[in-house]
Image (cartoon, rainbow, N blue to C red; front, side, top):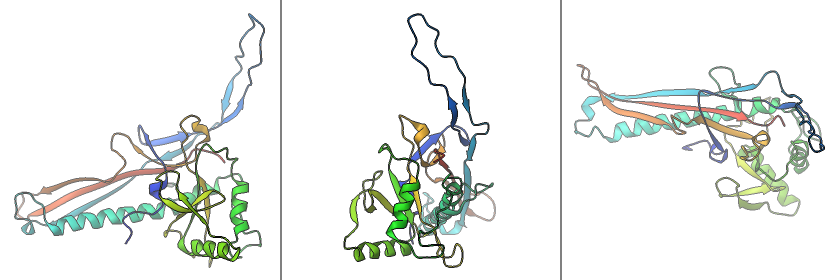
Length: 276
C-alpha cells in the first residue's frame, strides 16, 4: 500500500491563520498616469470581484482503541497499538488522496481537482480527435496551450493515473523519443516531463469517471511569493495546528474496562489561487 497519495507531496503547502482561505481577483485597476510636478496623484478606485472564492479547512478525525491488557509495560508502547495507529494514518492519507481529485467542496469535502478544473475559463477539454478517443501527445499540448499564460515564475504539472502514464510513455516511444526525466520543481525528485512539465501519477484517478473515460489535469503549482495573484494549486493548513497528522496519545482509561487509546486529527484544504 502507498503510505500517502503520490502527488500531494509535490503540491506546495501554504500555512494560514484561521479556518479558511479566501481569494478574489481585480476586475478593474486604474492605471496611474504620469503627472507634472505638483500634479494630483491618481486616486481612482480599485475594484474586486463582488464574491471572493472561499476554501475551507476540512477535518479528518480518528481514534485507535485496543484492550489495555495487551499493554502491561509502563511506557504504554506495544506493537499492536503502534500498528493500529499506522493503519489509521494510512486510511487518512488514502481518503485525502481521493479528495484531492474528487472532493466537491461541499461540507465536509474539500474542493479537489475535478471541482477546481471545472471553474477554469477554458472549461473541460475533450480529446482533439473527439470525445471518448484515446489520449494523444497533441491532447497534452492542447492542455498547455489552453492554460493561463505561463511566464516561468511557477512550476506546472500534469496529473494522471498510471494507465494514462503508460499510454503517454508508449506514445513517446512510437514517436521516436524517450520522455525527459528531470528533477521535479518542488522536491527535486526525478520525474518524467513533457513540454517541460513534470508528470505526477495518482492512483486515485479512476478509469471509470464516465463509462471508460478518465481525466488528465494540468495544474499550476503555487503560490508565488512575489505575486500571489498569479499563484496556482496549493494545499493549506492552519499554522497553529501544523501540516501533518497529529496523534494525541497513548492514553489509558482508569475504568473497569481497561482501554488504551489515541486520537488522530488532520486538517487540510485545497485551493486554486488563480482564476486561470
